[in-house]
Length: 350
Image (tube, rainbow, N blue to C red; front, side, top):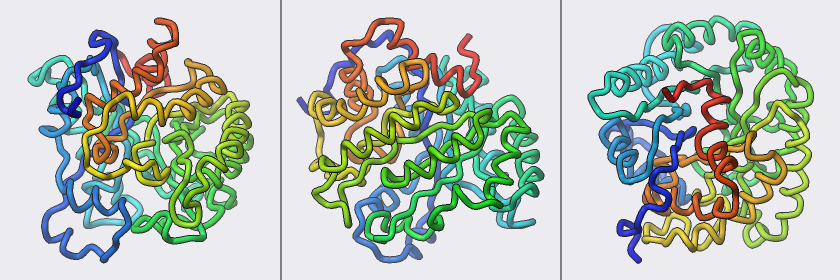
């Protein structure tokens, strides 16, 4: 069955999508991108614009999406003023989008009801000025930050994203000084790192048990670059670290991101329609381990859109996730698809 033609499964099941992005990359920016054949570059080249119109088209494609949480992606930073405060521009931009859907003009969905931005925790305690500015830029919506630590010795693993984070950043003393400010302000922390780096997050979570930490994309299993052909071989290592991380009660996990090229499923980024059955079969072993380890009340399904859109449409993606959860109770599904996200990001679905 073609991707766009799949019927919606469980169309009444409420969904809070806790992980999506918005961006606009004009032609001038695309022309200046460094050459790279890494598959992740395709999302940059082929989707230069994903703003409210595109988001609404996906949110209204058939599933009962009630609200969303925006995750930072470096969009709309300020070009002037102190460099440390430039990420505040992203919060201002997204808060405006949230205000648009909060007007009710576009229906009942509340896009960007929660906002996760960025602040450089390597500033140490001085990062509080940035965080306070972000709170002020989106009062009632700003929930925390993401400071990705994705790193690998092989630059071919991350491609255009290589070099953004130094090795072992989560263990750095100054970074942790900045991290401590999150707890002081009642903010959460989203983490994107790669499967071999999970011990770094385990150590961070143990050091800050009072701060809510969200693991993005089930910890990003790898099957490209130096890990080509080794994804299944490393499954046990990944599983053991997921279980150790789940033993930290302050950590929750996002179930998704497996449509990105890093895991090297054969259909990643081929731009071919894929059935939700095929996707669910591939993703289910990872999702089952996470739900078993964390429990439904500490796990939440995510879209990671538009990044995951290179594997399948938004409607097919949520069909696939629903298929992976087919054996769970109605109570568990309510937590996995909306309840956990609403609680962690403090959203009101009324």
